[in-house]
Image 1 (tube, rainbow, N blue to C red):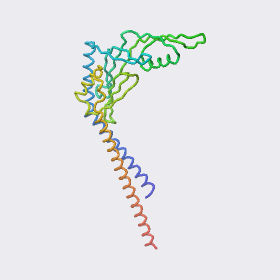
Image 2: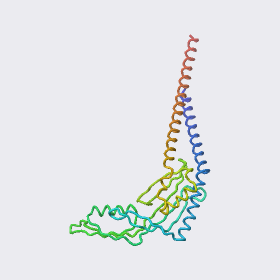
Image 3: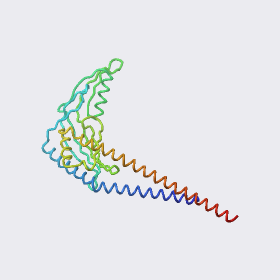
Image 4: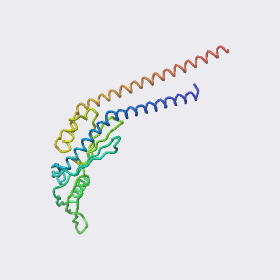
Length: 265
């Protein structure tokens, strides 16, 4: 087998891999469009109407965040809902935004520079509006500070369609603590019961919502791991079989050359 044959075989293997990947991507997109996209539309239509009613009746919803220096909770009013999507034709992201407002500004005074900085970092993590007035000694060292925390805390509840993993991610930003929290659901999870529970979760009425089907999800992860191991095993067997065929072909080619030389002798 010459160099051109080697290159040809490598090209054919690469082309086959590229075609297989294109087909995989096409299959994933087809599944998303046929199964997950309708769920995203269902969620968007629900949230759109949900927000319209909430803003009209000005629903009275309270939540609490640990924004005191000692970590104790402070009550906020949840208001001003707005929902947006990335595309009207093929929805891949739904963003529900609302604000949590303090009934009145939180005023307090802290001593000790380290404690002041820790509390400042907490407020920054929420991206909440606040004023800080420092008191320094004659050496310009921070000894105390007065805080006026005005708010609000901006909250984002994002639903993101994931074509590659055939899933819908729920991303919570500042929902009940600072920063981002992510949860993943499959098409089978998005039922009428799920959507109703999701609405109640947003209104702080369903704290058990994110515990939904965890055992089933764990089983699904195990099934996926087994399927992936099986796929890799078949791939390794196929590659080993291909190597054996090449070796047998090379050996047969060597024997044919030897037989040819014997005849010439």
